Amino acid sequence: KAGVTQTPRYLIKTRGQQVTLSCSPISGHRSVSWYQQTPGQGLQFLFEYFSETQRNKGNFPGRFSGRQFSNSRSEMNVSTLELGDSALYLCASSIRTSGDSGQFFGPGTRLTVL
Amino acid sequence: TQLLEQSPQFLSIQEGENLTVYCNSSSVFSSLQWYRQEPGEGPVLLVTVVTGGEVKKLKRLTFQFGDARKDSSLHITAAQPGDTGLYLCAGILTGAGSYQLTFGKGTKLSVIP
Image 1 (cartoon, rainbow over the protein chains, first blue to last red):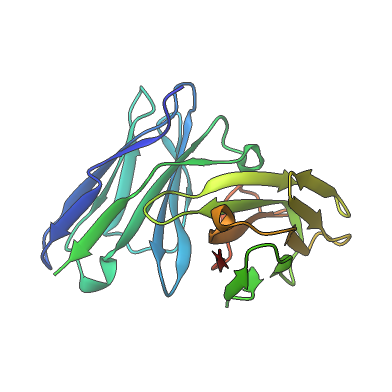
Image 2: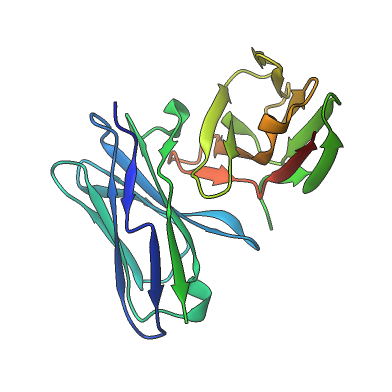
């Protein structure tokens, strides 16, 4: 079974621009979660989608948004980029929305904001 | 305030040594997971523990969930260079009304050959 894939793997943007990241979950997994990972804060939860509905949302500003499509693929968008948005963005999929089933992570998208 | 505190933050040991890393909280978790992350990759799930006092073994790795479900430990016996990585604990809060995983900041382990 193919793992979670994320595109692009690397991205360089400038302040004020916007960016869209893509995630394809493992086949059959309907829950997709997004995390931001930085050296200072570690892994922080952004949001979770299940069957095209946002189920949970972390403490991030409204500049961070996401969506999920009917095939479970998900995108996240960050508008008006700030320097502090530089991070590794990880997508994780799981069979169900209850986190105890364990999450399968993609390799991440490394975003650098200049 | 970090909900899950991991210690130590960094650990550098020689091949063959034993080590224990800890994951502590003042909150009760319905379950706790351990992940290992290698550079350039996403975290990989190692184990999930759900019952207070539970002990799980995965080859040379032993995971324990505290009786009160507030803490967990990971013990590695005879560490090998392939164990090098960032070890993350993550938990689901009891009664939170959601299944959001909360991660600790991790323990960065280096095993020197």
